[in-house]
Structure formats: structure tokens, C-alpha cells
Image (cartoon, rainbow over all chains, first blue to last red):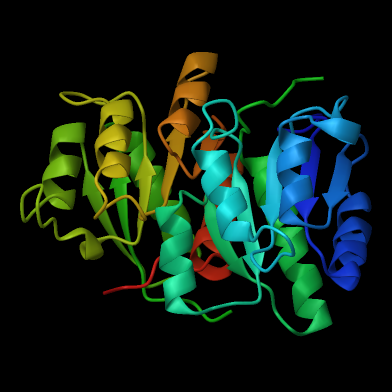
Length: 147
Length: 146
């Protein structure tokens, strides 16, 4: 269950969260690539390989914040899960909201899971490590390439 | 991240794998209730107790689903759960020994929340169950109960 080269797309506008996620995930496995886009429009441009993202590869896993500028995370999720080529990519929703209506709405849009970002820094690091353990070593991703 | 009171539906026909999964969960000492269905038909009967229109879907918070099952196979169970708006939010983790690429692609296409290949070795399998438990029962926010 090791030795995969994984590409992750992080959709997050908050610079601190971006930085922390990059720091935590880069410590672990060599060969993983993380692409960052800071709003919903850019996320869709990346996934449809438009404009400056023409050479982008489809990611193996998407980490998606819900509160995003330009196009919010729910719209991005709905578009991904309605697209026959994109829908198989697991989407981990990672957000500060723990409102029941957001959780249910997100599952109704076919999110693969829903994780509340802890406010506490150490707990947030722990959450990021757990996401990595689960999705990058336990789970078989749809596009996993054995290397 | 407090442990949540959850009920798991394990859909697995191989008695050894059922025993291993239950044992691995017991090792974690959690009081989660685990319901076992031995084939796809039984799983659907549990999930759709009130009929297709008003299934008592809240009975289950997480489904661990094997693919190779008697009567109704796992992909069909997955398709039915994920195409019914009442049961669609329930997370389904496919836990299988299948090495077929098609099962992997088809499971995600039908809306599986994650796909895990069962390790053959018990210790490794217990490790996977532990991770499953940590991830789905502690980290993840399950769909709210009605």
C-alpha cells in the first residue's frame, strides 16, 4: 500500500491553512504533488484544464474548503460530481462549518467525506495527518498508479 | 473529536472475514454496534426496512461493503443505496479482496466513499480496521441523524 505517486488538488483561500496543509503533507511521502487553487473558479479551470492549467493532470484526490471566493465549495462539488470524468475523484470536504444542514447538503452532493477543521493548531495538524494516513496509505484511489 | 455513537453495517459473506473484522473492532474496545449481513439481499432488507419509499435508513451510520456477495452483489447494493435519496448520504466503504481495476473504477463511479483492498495478513488487516475506525468514526462528520 505504499509507493504511489499521488497528485492532490487543494482548494483553499485561507493562506494560513494552505501553508499548514502543504507543510504537513510534504513531510510524509516523497513523490506526492500538491496543487493549490484559491477560489472555486480556478478549481474548475484546473479540473477542466483551461487557460494556464492546460497542462494540469487530473488529481487523484481533492481537498475542498466550502467557503470560497467567486464560486463556493458546494457549487464546485456539485459540478465535479455531475461530470462523468471527474465524479470518481474522491472529494474530502474540509471546512470550519459543523452546521447539520451543511453536512447533509454536502453528502447529498456526493462528497466522499466531511471533516470539520479544528480551530486548535495541533488538532488541525493531527487531522491533516489522519487524512493523509487514510487516503494516501489505506485507501485505493480510483486513479492510483503503482510505481 | 469525541467518539460518536454509531451503528455499522458490515456486509460480508466470508465468516473468517466477519470474525476478523469484529475481532479487530473489539480490539479497539469501542461500543459501536455492528450489524452483519451475509449477502446483498440481506443488506438491502436491513437498509430498506420500511420499503423503498420510506427506508429506515437512519438505522445505519456507516456501511462496510464487500463486493463478491451471494444473491445480490456488492456493486448492486452500492448502486441501490447511492441512487436512493434517503440512503444516499450514508458513507459506504468498499472493503474487498478484489484486484480487478474495473471493480475499483465502478465502485467510485457508483458513489463509494472510499475503496480499500483487504490485506491478507491479520495484523495488517487489524491495522486497516483501526484506521477505518479512526477515520470514519472519529474524524469524519457523519450525515446528521434526523
